[in-house]
Length: 103
Length: 267
Image (cartoon, rainbow over the protein chains, first blue to last red):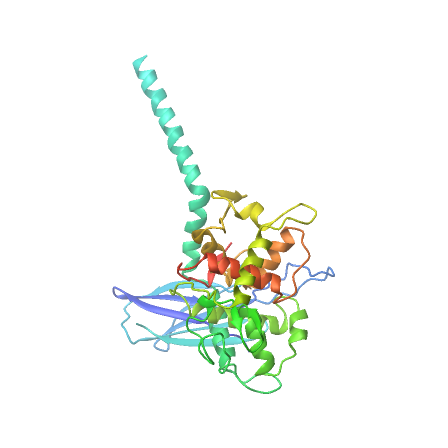
């Protein structure tokens, strides 16, 4: 199972500033191992963010995103106590969803 | 003519300005880059993993590490790292954080320490030790380094560490001190801390465990020293060997009263 994400969501004026740190290998599929065999691609493909259960952002990611990626975005019209959830799905079908409360 | 000299002066001024800007960008640029990354330091992920591993019942004995004594009594984690390496009566050895964690994994959880010692860094249970070390170090954030120098063995290790620091050997006749005993030195664009001073020692010793952006790996102090020895063309030190502990004691004692800030982020 995938390791948990670290999500921080803080109010900045009327907006919620969300910072997410994901734990993932993000193997591009371009590298070769010591024997010359290609290391199969293994990276996040879909990222979804929710605000109180409602989807506010979806993103399609590819092999160009770094290992242990950091994602930052803002949500309009938020308030402290709101729930912000982030989930990802990788090309092997593994998923991870985490949620936090806005402070 | 007056106009010409005025414009020449302007050009000269521009040159000076760009020269100082270039000078600033060399080391300050890296500092800026680090500050940007610090906000989303992936070391946080390892920290969370380490905390989880500490509380989990693991190993052949299916116990957690919550009774592990890191020098401040069983289960006391906060502040432990700022006082390591130190002498432990039960093993009758001066141990650093990682070798102490391995002792706990052996005695409390029943892991085969010899096998873990032989495991390459970043594989199997070595990743466990690194994650645990990251969390334990983070629990001392903001505290001041205060390594004990009471026991005779601790003093011996300090002297040994100092000796090792200046010990020249290998194909390149290198010592730690070759690169790390003067102020204002750098290798390519990396500033080299002067590890013989408090400020330098804490920049070097105090930063690890750190997340290395260049290879996306979490490095503990053991691995850091291992790589120093690789660069010096020395033979690798065995995991948790007295050599690495002695260097840790020397650097830790030199860092006395400096504020702990690990886990850091490094190039």
